Image (cartoon, protein in one colour):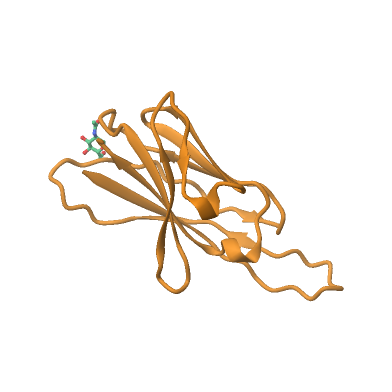
Length: 134
Ligand SMILES: *[C@@H]1O[C@H](CO)[C@@H](O)[C@H](O)[C@H]1NC(C)=O
């Protein structure tokens, strides 16, 4: 069983001499699911941030049987990349491209987070949080 929710970052271009900050917009969507059991993921509000900011995504749901929390990044080309996953009480496991600037946290079975330490335009993507029983 796996449930996904998505968060998207968009980065704009800015001229070098211009003080206008790059904007990043975050939103999420709930994808259709194929299991009979229904899980509710708590949505979060859109955010606007500047480049080099720290960005935090929060993920929470109401199913205490989803021990694993996974994070995915979908780039503009449609590629879906696994960022990593974690269990409650153990260290997160990261995929190589994400281990230096991404950090996953897990408060409890139903709550976790992903942060990007200093966002760049290459972080422009849709971010998914997923829960899995194992
Ligand atoms: C989670 O929320 C959904 C939608 O409100 C509900 O159908 C489901 O029964 C809830 N699951 C649990 C474990 O409470």
